[in-house]
Every structure is written in C-alpha cells, then in structure tokens.
Length: 202
Image (cartoon, rainbow, N blue to C red; front, side):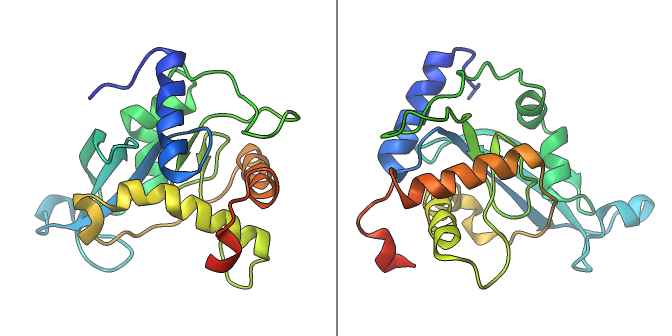
C-alpha cells in the first residue's frame, strides 16, 4: 500500500492514530525484527548479528488499522534497525523530507508550539524530529514513564500483527531535534494531553 503524497491524507492518518491510541501527530509505527537464517558461506560476517546467530532484518511500517503499509526483508543481520530504516525506501523519504507531510501543528488543547508529525518506534531506532522512541533506562521520572507508556500504546499497532512472535534486537543514538520533540510530547502527556487513567498505569 503506497503512502499518501497529500498532506490532507496524512492528517487523516494522524487523526486515526489519535482516535485509536490518544497519541497526536502520529502517522505510522515502525518495527524491525531479526529473523534467523541459514549461514551464507560467502558472507558469514554480514549475516552474523551481535546476539551470535545468523539473521536477516525484516522492517515493517504499519498504519492505525494494523495494516502493513511497507515492508522490506533481507538486510544483513549485523546492521541495526536504525541503520536499516535509514536505507529503507520509507525511511529515506522520511529523513530527506520527501513524504510531503503536513506542516507541524499544535497538539490538541495547546496553542504554543507546533510539533512535527512522527513515526513511533522502539529503542532500537535513532531519535529524530519525525521518529520518537522511548526514554532509555530505569529510574525514570514519572513524566518520562508516562511518555514511555503513551508511546508504547501507540506502538501496539505494530506489535499486534504477525511481527509479534519475532524477537527484536538493536540500539541506536539520539539526535538533538528528536530529543526536543520527545521532551515536548512528554510535557504534553503530563499536562494538556493527560488522560485520566495514566497515573494508575505507571
């Protein structure tokens, strides 16, 4: 299923995510999975991952209706999810700003700081102004735990499909703009975007 070239279509997609997950400005969820494969004699080191087995990477992008919009299978197992995503056609378009996304908009119940439209991902992906991942580590503040919970709820879209049974591996660094966007969403979920049940969940 091709991604829309029209900002209005992206707004519809973001609205679907918001209705289903309470996560504003979200347009897709992404997941990468390492799938075991048979040793390729000529390219042993390329398929050998840090978990000490041979694998290929399956990269999938999912919409709010649990449907795959794009998938790619076959990247070398030694590559991280973040690296594979940057080389993946959808990722290339996202990072080069060729997806024709709408201009940043204010989150619901706010009027101060327009935020970009984002893809939700796990901690194996690099943080970017359009890719949000959870805060890492333990001993997080309540506001960071709330953000991680809300991000996790939005990411369930990609977890509740055939990728669920495949284990995920990888890690990546963060980019400055992504940190700012994630921090803004964190404050938003604590204030204007708060939902009544979230304090009980964390």
